[in-house]
Every structure is written in structure tokens, then in C-alpha cells.
Image (cartoon, rainbow, N blue to C red; front, top):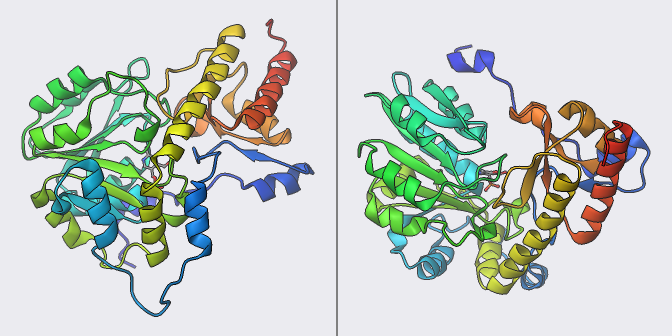
Length: 366
Ligand SMILES: Cc1ncc(COP(=O)(O)O)c(C=O)c1O
């Protein structure tokens, strides 16, 4: 068969273990998943209520224009409706961008480590991927600038970055965008935008106005707690959106998902509550790391990358045995660390206790 060349050296995405699998393997009555940066508080009660009372014409295709959601989102963001694109998760928007702009003879620049889907889809399209290592957990924007050449087509920035949680500060970002040739698309993936509290964080919607080669990606999967329903969106100028819309499949978001996203947009107080609780619980993680002399990256997201006193894989396995599912840094390109989603107070009580026993077991002094 005539498979694309790139597929030969690539592997399908391997999902982490589910709560049910972990319970069965380790003979546990309960397990807590802190591995996928989902919202531990679920979704807004009003969205759950809406879901129960939904009435949908099963046989009718969804609105491929996402009209109602588009109008609501445009008003919320203060942008024109033709500056938005909606995807089946921001994952799908990453695929669409790669498909629209990348191919053999082009290259794409990413940080490393970062969200792996940027490089994954660039490679599938046959583009060269240039990886610029983070410096102290931050995007090395100078390194990005140096990597640009005549064939560079897409630059991917992730802020807050997955897996470090670090943001790109306003001045650095503005300075960087001012130096990027207009024919290169700069993607700013803000999947964790709603969790940011740093008052100096850039308003990227303004940047989309200022620089005509920028697209911002956001999602309903994280703070809005709708990961199961797969809705992401992009904000850019209408020319970029029109080109990306050519690639998008016509009915890419289900009617149920569209309506739930519309309902979720109504409840800002839920988002504010999640942001606040996330911060409170993050402080506990920071204190814990400090008390135990473990390095932790500054995070503006709903997860933290924490040093472990043994190999990341061993730590992950041991935590799994106690019912806590986290991501090993070995799988994320950060050996010696685990990435933990910040859970609810009671989830974190248990997790930090399990983590303590890990440290005691490793014979480290507190
Ligand atoms: C940085 C980043 N971007 C995009 C996504 C994809 O999110 P979704 O496709 O659910 O919108 C994730 C999910 O973990 C992520 O961490």
C-alpha cells in the first residue's frame, strides 16, 4: 500500500490507563485519574441540567457553521463572527492547520517538550520538524527565531505550555511576533487559558488584531469540563479562518456538543470557581515540593510538573499501585518528573499522602 512515508517511523497515540483498568490491575476499590488535565470539578451544574433536558433531532446533521455558538462566542470575545473556527477539540484544529499549511519541503518549529500533537501532525504531512528545547521551562523564543528559514510555514507556541505549565510573558511574545515574517502562521495554543491568574499575561485576542499571521486556539475540554464532547475553537483573521475552513470537514461537531458548549458559555461563575480552587490546591503542591526539596515548575495551568526522588517511570508505577494515575516525565521528555493534574482537595489529600510515602520509601529526608 502507498502509505505516507512518515507513518513508517510513527506510532498511534497510546492512551494512559483508565480508572477501571487501574482498579482491576491493582485490586483497588477506587482510583483517581490525575493524568489528563481534566477538570476535577466536572462541568457547570447548569450544563448538566441542560444535558438532561436536551431534545435533539437525531436524523438531522449538526449546524456545520456552529451558528449559535459562533454568535455567543464572538460577542463574548468581542470579535467578528468570521474570525472564529470551531473544531472537534482543539486537537482537530491542530490537524486542520497542519493539513492546510504543511507538506514536504516545508518546516514547522515547536518547543520541546510541548504538546506532542503539533510535531505529530507536521510529520504526517511530511514537513520537517525543528524542535527548540525549553530553557528553564520556558519557550526559547530566540532559538525559534534562529530556526526560521525560507521554508518555515507554521510556528507552534503553547502557553501555558504542556507539560511545564509555564506561560510566555507579554513583552517577549509581542517582541517575538514583531520579528516573524508575515507568511508564517504562528499558533498560540491556550488550552489552559481560563486557569491563568498572572496579571501580566498577554491578551492574545488583541495580538490577533495586531499581527495578521496569528491564530489562538482554545478549548471547552479543560476548565469548561467538556472533554467528553470535543469542542475547541480558533480565533484569527477572516482570511486565515476561510482557508482553514476549506480543510475542516463540514459537520465536525455534533449537535449535542455544540449545544453543551453554548450552555457552558453562560456560566462564567463556574470557571471563576475552578480557577480559584485550582490556585488554592496548586499552593499545596508548591508547599509540598518545597518542604521535600523537590523542584516544581511555575504553572499557570491545572497541572504541575514535579520532581520525583526516583525514576519517573518507577514513581508513576508506585503511585498507580496506590490508585493515583499521573503521567511519567519519561513519556513527556522530562525524565525525573511527573505531571500531575491538580485535583480536588480530597483527591489531593490522598495524592500527597501517597507521594509522601513514595518519598519515605526512597529514603529521602523531609
Ligand atoms: C496544550 C494542549 N493543546 C490542545 C489539547 C487538546 O485539547 P482538546 O482537543 O480536548 O481541545 C490539549 C489536551 O490535553 C493540550 O494539553
